[in-house]
Length: 163
Image (cartoon, rainbow, N blue to C red; front, side):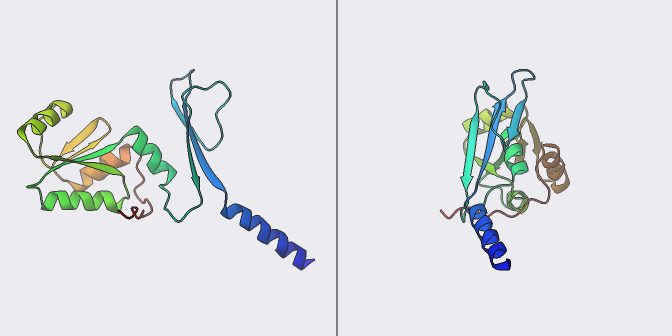
């Protein structure tokens, strides 16, 4: 009896190891809201995006972080002259395991384009989260903006893939 129970448990656990986690994303036509779910969308939904991740040794970004990143992408605006504040800013983003793109301004044309994009003078570093931005590094302000965008504050550390 115990042997049968252990055999069944071992089989169930082995099936779980190879399970896939799939996240679906679509726009609800009635509300216009983007819906994220681990269940397939109702029939007839358009623009369905599917993100299937099989069990692997690669770390998977937490759902809340993925959702926040899709809705409010993070960009760190830097320059080659920025040392201390940019290092602190990157460290904060890495500590919170937040995916971000690093935009280095090197020319006057890039500065002007970024100024136009942000709608204000550019100060280095600038953190852009979705449509909001903060010039200069201030840990409390950056954390507040990231919190408001839905990024988890205690996100699990994610090891970036080897380059």
